[in-house]
Image (tube, rainbow, N blue to C red):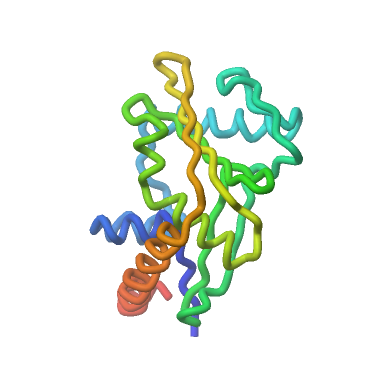
Length: 184
């Protein structure tokens, strides 16, 4: 039996009814990249390089220093509630005990973005993997104003249960669809 590799993006796309995006994401197929998405990816690489070399953010994010940061930390765990799945996530960075997420957006601020399910998903993933993650710091950089803001998000049982519910609800649906379509 092939295991389904669930990620936040896959589950979110499924939840939003974007089946084609689920397949493209899962099979690592090329997708449309807007100029804003390209700029966001370039900024993401700049932050990653700065963390690797200087253990600090670039000037656009205030040169904030981090203790032993791990950029692009990838975590994969077997899903304990359904052996058909593994769950994978990639934190933009991790500096114990903080998950660090970076967004590049002119339309939504960090407080608004912090209400998305992504951090809930990451808290649950870290918990299952035994990684100490007490909180997340979400930084949002606005390239049009060249300013950033930050939100602090605490790990909570409620957030992790919401993520667990999403995985348990949509995981089996995705598994069945991918099996029927011959993707798994």
